[in-house]
Structures are given as C-alpha cells and as structure tokens.
Amino acid sequence: MKECWCLPPQGSADFVCAMEDVLEVYHRSYGENEVLVCLDETSKQLVQETRQPRPARPGAVMAYDYEYQRNGVRNLFMLFAPLEGWRRVEVTERRTKVDWARVVRKLVDEDYADRERIVLVMDNLNTHHPASLYEALEPAEARRIAGRLEIHYTPKHGSWLNIAEIELGVLARQCLDRRIPSQEILEQETSAWQEKRNGEGIRVDWRFTTEDARVKLKCLYPSIQQ
Image (cartoon, rainbow, N blue to C red; front, side):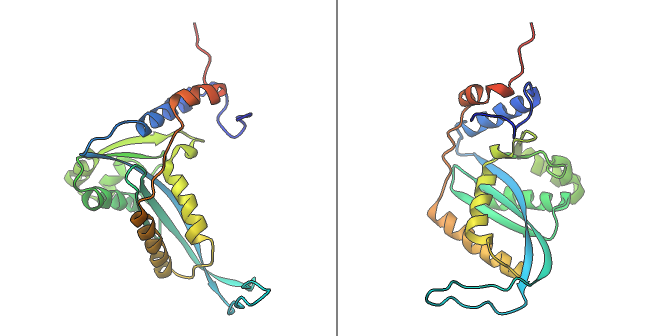
C-alpha cells in the first residue's frame, strides 16, 4: 500500500482503536459455546424485462433490450460465520431498526441457538445497535437477545474490515449480477446460492493482523504525545 488517500487522515485514533479491536476478534480462539458472525447489508434493485431477451447462438451472446421496468429495491442482510463456513442471506423490504432486530433474533434463536455467545462484527450504522431490539421486542426478550451478543463495530471508513463485505462481493458476482424481477425470485436465487456455499463449507482465511496494520497502515497512527 503506497497511499492512504482512501482511508481516514493521519492521527485517527478512533479508527486505529476500532481497527485493532476487530483484528483481535478475528484472531481470537473460539470455544465450542461461542461463534464469530459478521453482518453487513446491501441493496438490489428489482428489474423486469419489457421485451424477451434474444437467446445466444453461434457467434453471438445473449442480448438484452436496454429498456426495463423498475419494481422497487430490496435490502439484503448478509450473516456470515467465516470460521464455520456458514452464511445466511435475509431479503427484506426495508432496513429499519425493526428489520435488523428480527434478523438478529433469528440468528440467536435459530441459527446458533446452541451457542452461549455470538461475537457479532458489523459497521456502526444507526440501526445496528442493541437499542433497536427494544423497538421490536418486549423488554425482557430484548434483554435476553442482547445478553447473548458481544458486539464489535468496524470503524468509519473501515468497511473493508468486515468479512461479511467480502461475502457480499461474492454474492454480487455469482448471483446478483443480472436482472431479477421480483422479491420472490430474489429470495429463491439467494437461497440456492447460500445452500451451495454452505454445502461446500467455504470459509475465509483472514491473515491481516494487528502487527501488519502497525507496519502497512503506519500513516494512520497518531503521533505519541509526550
């Protein structure tokens, strides 16, 4: 890395603190009763063809008409356990605090009901907060869900630290890089994609460490004040 123009300015102590916290989480040893899960979101515009695409033939690829019909936008939550080779894509109409709370509740009560602690890494979006649980659930239920979570936030301008973003990139290339007309089809396609990836147990081998950061991203560290 030669320049840090795409990152926070030099001396960003808040960024460095949050970055090193997330890097420590990624290299921690996990017991049988805990799991690391990364959460991120993206959106997908639903697009329907207005004319039948021209099929591929010898010497010519399939051709789509430039006109299309917009059918709205859907939000996609990506939940990814990089050390377990597991992921789940949740399609929602919106991405409100209540939507986030319901996704996290399912993570706690269904996906990893057998784990006492879920170490959750995500960006610091205003909806990504335990307080959101109280807007969707009864107080006792919200407290129960929050008690199972250990939350770590990636820093501002540090979305690359969220491993779920890597998996969203794979989803975009392998599944979403085409016109999808409806939420029903979007759910079917993302479900088929995640089943295949989960069946293959594809993980992420994260190798960037705190020691690497202190060398390669030295320009971001504040000067020590005497």
